[in-house]
Length: 68
Image (tube, rainbow, N blue to C red):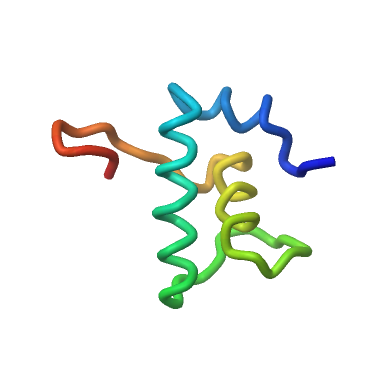
């Protein structure tokens, strides 16, 4: 089973495409040395990013040029 659930994650954003972009951007930040905002048993950056989104630790702002 995937944790966090896709159903939970999609409710946090306006579309599944936004979810993908947001998770990718946050995972890149984690790879570059940013501190994780949640405790997660996994050490994979994408999993940590998705967990942060599920727990509302990461937010986004839609701009004309993309997601910020």
